[in-house]
Image (tube, rainbow, N blue to C red; front, side, top):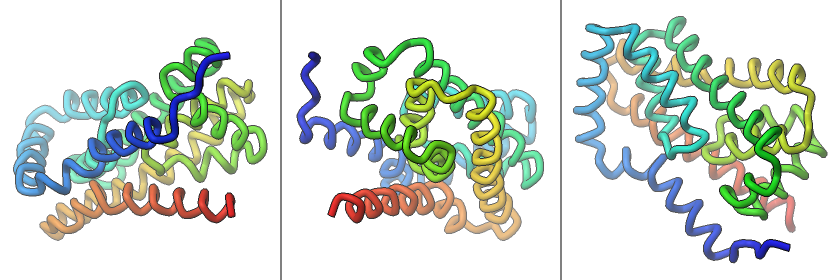
Length: 217
């Protein structure tokens, strides 16, 4: 039996991922706003390339610490609400389907090795107990969203059922971030950009942690 990662090590890895996903935009706020302006200008000049880049970045979030809050919010800011929602949704679906495929065909041992046995076991158990509800609730939570997609594949959930549930869940997440990004541009509000980039991911993560602690009492 493979040795499970120590709890301290696991929490340090999660903290490092959250630092990359949430902390960096907050710490480097001025640089983030300057980069946002440059990205929005580039999207105006080459919208198709910008959309393809955002979709690819969101899809690769399964393997790389891509700050989804930043990417999603900028997509809404660059393309507006309707088109921004579509671009974000395509990227989130790419990540969801990649995660399911990885879990289904790369098998449990490899998933455990890359993500940590405890995290995969917990997500697997939750996916088996709650099924679609767990997938929907986990979708906006940083790190957990990717783990749950993999767990659904490991658990052998029907692909059609998984795809339908994730299509609806991802649509809700995409619409939320696109609306914030579009509103930030319309109101020239840096605060709204930071809300989407940092505030919402942090809120969803803390809500998940609070729920977990309440369940283990």
